[in-house]
Length: 68
Figure 1 (tube, rainbow, N blue to C red):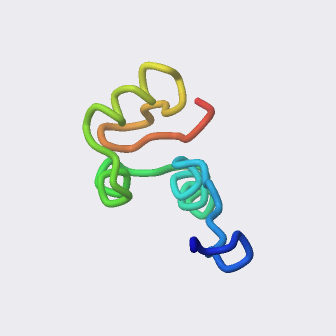
Figure 2 (cartoon, rainbow, N blue to C red):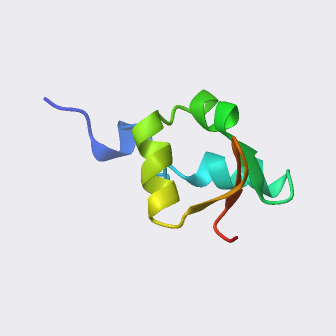
């Protein structure tokens, strides 16, 4: 027999951007490119967020998260 639902571990479907927002919150809304890479984002993911106005460039390699 299979495992019952009660015995299965609980998994929470987190937003993949939660760690980015949490780190930026502790840094006045800013995050660096090396930090984004360290959180597992690739170059394409960073570019996507920049082009879709989720990241705003403040200086080279430094972004504001969610607002300019």
